[in-house]
Every structure is written in C-alpha cells, then in structure tokens.
Amino acid sequence: MKKQLLLLLTLSVPVLSFGQNVMGRITANGVGVPNVMVSDGEVVTQTDADGQYSFTSTKHYPYVFYSLPRGYRPQQKNGFVPLFWQSLDSNNKEKVERHNFMLFPSENDNYQMIIGADSHLANRTGDLNQFKDGYVTRIRQEKSASPDPVYSMILGDLTWDNYWYSRKFNLADFYSKCTEFSYPVILWPVIGNHDNDGGTAPSNDTDFLSAQPWRKTVAPTFYSFNLGRVHYVVLDDIYYKNEDTGGSYNTGIVGSRNYDALITDDQFEWLEKDLALVEDKDAPLVIAMHIPTWALSSSSPYTPLARLSNDGTNRLCKAVKQFSKVHIVTGHTHYNYVAHPKEYPNVTEHNIAAICATWWWTGQITGHHVCKDGSPGGYSMWTVRGDEVSWKYHSIEDNGNMQMRIYDMNTVKDYFANDENAKKFFAVYPSRTTYSSVGKNVIYINVFGYDTDWKIEVFESKIKRSVSRVRNEDPFHTIAYDVPRTVQNGSCTADFSTNMTSHLFQSTMTSATLPVTVRVTDSFGRVFVQSIERPHPFNLDMEKLQLNDDLTDVGSTELTPKVKVYSPSLGQLCIESPIEQPALIVLPDGTFRRVSLQRGSNMLPAGHCPGICIIKVGEGTKKVMLR
Image 1 (tube, helix red, strand yellow):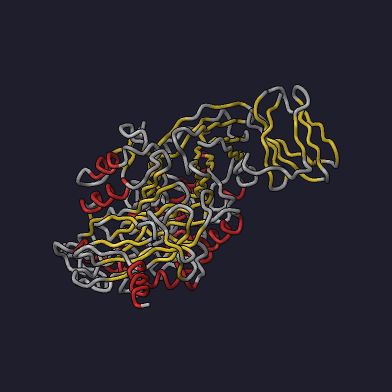
Image 2 (image 1 turned 135 degrees about the vertical axis):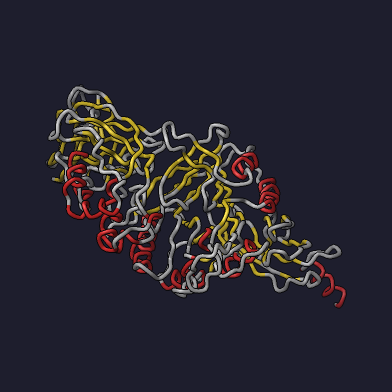
C-alpha cells in the first residue's frame, strides 16, 4: 500500500532537475493541458503531456504566467480579470514554489475584440461617470449584440500617474471601479507611460521599480495569449525615467514623469522565445503596445517614420519577419491613423484614438466626446473569423458609429470670422487657423478610420467631383474643446489642443447651395454614405443632420427574409415588402431616394447607371447589382 501511495505521489508532480524552483500544472476539467507556454519573463517553457511544468527562475520578475492556448478561456476574477498569472511567493531563489492554473474549454475561433486605448481615469473632469455611462455601457451593448465571444484590450494609460497621490486614484482604484461598474468582458491590459509610479525616485532602476505597482496589481508588463488562431503579444515600450528637472511636481510625484519610447533588450529576448513556439506563421499576429512604432510624415504621401528609440522599430519588425500578417495596435496619441511601412510589407500599424477622447474634457464641457483629430472618442472593433480579421472604428457616443463628418467650409469660415467666442479664442491664440485660406465652396470630410486602400467619392447633386487629401486641423474639435475651454478658463492645455489631421479630404463644389453626398468604401468593401444640404450649419449639433444617411456596415446585415429586392430589367428595381414601410435607396451614382413601400411589389425606376445599388429597410441593408 505504501509503495502504491508513493507511486501516485511521484506521478502527481514533475521530476525536478537540480535548482528548478517554479513548478505547477495547468488543467481543464481536471485534465492536464499539454504544450501551454509558461514563462517568468525570462525563461520560456511548455507544459508536458500531463499539463505539468517546471523551470529554474532567477525571480527577477515577481510572477509566473502562461499564454492562453487556442480553444480555451482563462479563469476570471470579478467577471473581467483574466487569471493567467500569479505572483511568486518569494524572491528567494532557493525556495521552490508551486503555481497551478485552471482553464475552461471555449470555442473561440470566431469572436470580436474591442481594442481601446487611453482611458486616463483619475477621478476628475467627470471621468468616472463618462467611463461608466459611455465606454462600459457601449461594450455591454457590443457584447449583447454579438453572437460570438467578445473580449477587450486597453492599450495603456488606464490611469494617470500625475494624480495617483493628489487624487488618490491609482491602478488598484481603476480595477475597483471596473468591478463596481460591472465591466462586462475579459480585459487584456497594456501598460502605458501614465501607468508607472511617479513617486519612484530617479535612479538606474527607475524603469523597473516604477512598474512594480503594475506587476503586483494588474499583470506582467509583457506577455502573450492566443484567441482562436490569432496570437497576441503585449509589450511594454515605455522606458520610464522620472528625472528631476527642478520643476514643481504634483503631490507625491518626485520627478518629471519623462520616458523614452523603447522596448528593452530583455523583452526582445523573451519575444524571440515566445514567437518560436507559434507554429502557424500565416495566421494573424497582433502586437499590442502603448506608444506607436511608426509615425506618419507631416506631408503627402504621409510616409511611415520609425518612432521607437534604440532602433526598436526596425528590431521589432525584423523579429516578426517570418509572420505573413502582422498587426501592431497602439494608442498614446489620442488620434487615428494607419501605417504601412514599405520596408516591411507584412506589417500594418493601427494607432487607435482614445477612450477618454480629449482627456474627458470635451464630454464635460460640451457633452460631445471628441479626440484631437476630430474622431469621436471610441475604440476599434475587430471581428475575427478563423484567420480572417476585419476592423471598424466605433464611437462611444450614440451616433450610429459614424465613419465621417462633412464640413461646409463656407459656414466654418464664417463661424471663425464672426463668432464672439471664436474672437475671444483668437485673441489668446492669434496663430491658430481661421481656415480663411480655404477656397470658396470647399467641403472637408474627416474620415476617421481612413486607410490608403479606402475609396472616397464626393457628389454635388448627381455630379461626381474630384477629391484630394489635405492636412489641416479638424474644426469640430476646435469648437468642442479649444474655444469653449479658452473662454471658460482663459487658456486651453497645449497637449489637448486640436492637432493636424492626416485623414482629412477636400472637394470643391460649383455652388454654395447644392446638396453634397459622400460615399466611402473601406478595406472590406463596406460602404458608408452621408449627405448634407447646403449651406450646412457648423455647430456642435451638426452631426445630427448627417446621421440619417449613414449606411453603416452595408452588406453585413440582411433584410428581413420576407423583403425581397432584385433588378428585373434595365433601370428597374423591385422591392417586395410584406408591410407598408419606408426605404432608403442609394443609387450607383451616389444619389439618394427615400420611398414609402406599399405592401406587395414596389416597382421603382432606378435610372440607367449600372452598378451596385444599396437598399436600407428598417435595420437591414442589402446590395443589389442594378442592370
């Protein structure tokens, strides 16, 4: 009996080699899960056939973590915190520790990933209520609407280091509030520069020590996980210095909170080991960080420029050269852009505008959530179907997830020339743009999620006009933040002011009164259409006059089964409807028709311009090839 018991005990633990001090087992439904990557940030190993692992750790990093394998979900705390890591018991290398993890089988080849950035919670400017009533409510709605699992990431700056002590709001408070607000989906966190402890004295170890609160409260500063066929890697590209420059600092802060945009050598060493375990190099690889890897040049053709220090941009792109589809997702800037570095055709970077928009100020001042580039405060919604990935920018405000905003620059110029608040603003900031150099009858279109393969078409009445990409300030953000904040406060914070936007387009009309229609086709063939009557007002409520014609996600939803649409003959469109109801028809030339459908067959003239016709009935949309 004693021999049998000894045999069972021997089988229940791995055989340790000399000096191995971290061990454990990863199970699902009581059965060991093999080939799961386990790491302490330096060593990378895998579980054996029984889910056992063991290795020798220097215990430099105070934790052990695993990389979630395909087809599983992690154990969770408070409904949203993934328990994929555990703190080590001791930094004593002589002490042997056991850390077990539990997984749950979950079919997740198809899912949605909400990728946001920069929540900047600090218990100021009404941020907590805006976060709860805006962002958390929106992702709860996204979860309810999705037939597939929904996950989320926040790409750094969960908090705001400058207010950890003066406002008594730090990383632990962020998680406490997310628990209180019933954050509805798993949150994979990324460290940002404002998630480091500004109370850490400047020294050679400042970067490591300032991130210790993150490591103890949130997660490892770099790690990986798999959802379906996609491998995700989270990196820390902030080298926090917090140098004392002799200035005055906020309560509890001992330095300037400065940093370099840099990926440390130890992360590159770990990354090489992690990626070596990824077998399918043709499946998507997503690298998540805070500071962008690439910036865009300030003039056409907006060439991507390496941004990370210590040649980090090239080192990272070379590290992933074996992968055919690499997506880098970043935040930090509070504006949107997409970079395609010519030197690395397998790499696309998506810099995503902020959850907090302009640090929650525009929501507090004007009730509109607007980022520095004019994009609505929001996040990127990624849809994953096996190894196919698509994305679309979603707004936190209830605006139908509009993809563009159209400006009649005649009325924009009139506002900046004659509005009393605008005059007060220019008295303080005389060098800011008045748009006076913009030509007569020009329209601007801000296309928030623009990529270089998108198609922008502009129609004046039924006549197609030429379109060109321009670089200028977005006027809507100026009246949502710069002007009212200056009038209210005497000045506006320079870092929060409107920036030059690279996804702005212009087209010159022949008239000041003819209507304008803009049709945008994105990378995935989705068509978004908006129109304005002219002169079009320029004010904080102007968007309400542009939303009715926004055919978002055309082709992704179907009409009610009983509604049939087809083109029976040249220039004819037939809609068979079971009830009386309105319909919106977008013709191939970009013009609109609103019709009232009768019960039964509705034969409608559709002109003699062949091409794709879009029909919207209720919440459904459908494309039909018009003969």
